[in-house]
Each structure stands twice: as structure tokens, then as C-alpha cells.
Image (cartoon, rainbow, N blue to C red; front, side):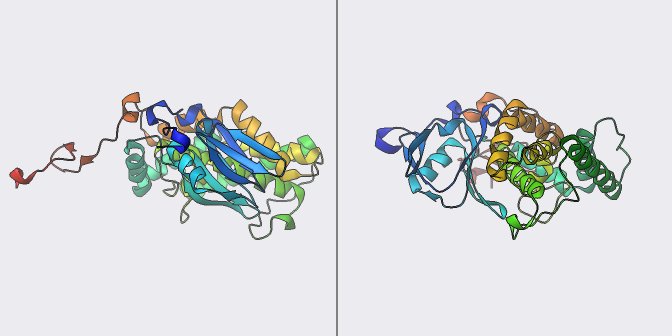
Length: 312
């Protein structure tokens, strides 16, 4: 049961990840729950948030979260990501609204087979740089091609906005030790990573089974987020710094939130990941109930919850 007699939201009635809003950022407040709404409280008052329409809640410095708030996150399939000056730190996430592991199995297969992994990597680069033939490139050649294109994107945005640009200087140990444009890029990327992480959780994917990136528990988040940086975080960061904002990080988050909604990034993540992994969209019946099957190499599917002693 929920709080004050309210039942938890039904999984079948929850918005799919592609239909949700982007993210909510909160800092220096207490995050609690009032029935099926999330509440944010500080000395200025209380704000109620309809959490089931959010994809992810980003918690900045100075936040305190109650057990009831985390319970609501889990029931709503909404990710909760702690973030701060040192970048994204994932502490917990709501249970995926997907009740099938088809996406996860496809992701595991493609990330563990060298040829399939290379094919997905090529497809990712083709999405980022349309019009280029990458069908025969090795990973080393793909990285070189990417480096040249990304450097050009940075230069183009610097020329467009008049912002001085030298190089990408990401300092996870000291956010404020870099120049304003690098601070803006780091803050923008943090927001995009949170949105991407929430979308992948909602699809039933593993954030850690990467294709291009490796060795980190958020590798697939970085893979997928890279698909959209040229149209989201990079221009937003340069635009924000060009306006000489007094609070770069806050201004960037607001702009990213608007761009994610305008460009339908959540919907793009869903479609693109399904395409990359070769898994068609699930039908609505996978939301209705938890169906657990047993593995059998001789039969396609064996029902769970049954005593098979007569077969032995």
C-alpha cells in the first residue's frame, strides 16, 4: 500500500519512458512524499511533483531523501541519480517498467561477441556522422574519425558563439578548476547522462554493458549519450557561456531540459537503442504481469512456478 491509503501506481498505467518528461534537478532541500507525489521542501516552501511523468530525478548537493520518497521512485519506475561537482554518481534507480529481459539479452549478446559488437559500434558512428561510409572501418579507425569530427564540432560552435576554445578539459576532481566552457560542458553532459541512464533502465538494458566504452558501470550510458551531444550539450554549453551567465551549471541544466523535450531525446533513445540492439518494440502485454520462464536448451521456453519432478 502507498502512503495515507493510496495504492501504488499500477505498472500497466505508468507512462513509458519515451513518453515521459526529461529530468528534475534538486539541491539543498528535503525530498519526501505526499501520497503519490514527490515533495521538495526548503525554507521557501514545498513543491509537489507528479513523479510518474519524470524519467529521472537528479539530486545535487545538500539534498536529503526519505525512505518513502525512494519507495515512490521504485514504484514509479523513475530513476534517482545523485550528482554533483564530480559528475554523475548513480546510487539507485527505480525498477524498470519493462517486465521482459529481451533487451538485456540482446545487449549482452552483442556486447560479448566481437563481430556483433563492432557492427553496433559502426552503426553508432553512422548515426552520429551521417553520410560517411564506416562499414569497413576498424575500432581504431572509428576512434580517429570520431576525434576529428568532434574537434571540428567544438571549433564550429566556438566560431558561432565567439567563445574562446582551447580543448576539452574535464576535471572530475575539481569542477571549478576548469574554464567556464568546460564547466558548462560537464554540467550539460551530466544532465544528459542522467536522462540517458533513466531511458536505458526503463527499456530494461544494463548501463554497464558497453559497446564503444568499456571498464565502467555506466559504459552503455556514455555510448548512447554520445549519439546526441552534437545537437544538445555542445551547442547549449557554448550558447550559455556566450551569454556570460553568472551561474553556468544552473543555466545549462535549464537549457538542456528544454532541448531534451524539444528534440524528443527520450523518444530517440528508445527507438535508436531498439534499432541498435535489433529488438522490436515490445507489445503492451509485457506490462500486465511478471512472467518468469525457465531456461531449457532443448525447448524455446519452459513455464516457471511448476514442479517438473515427473520429467526426471
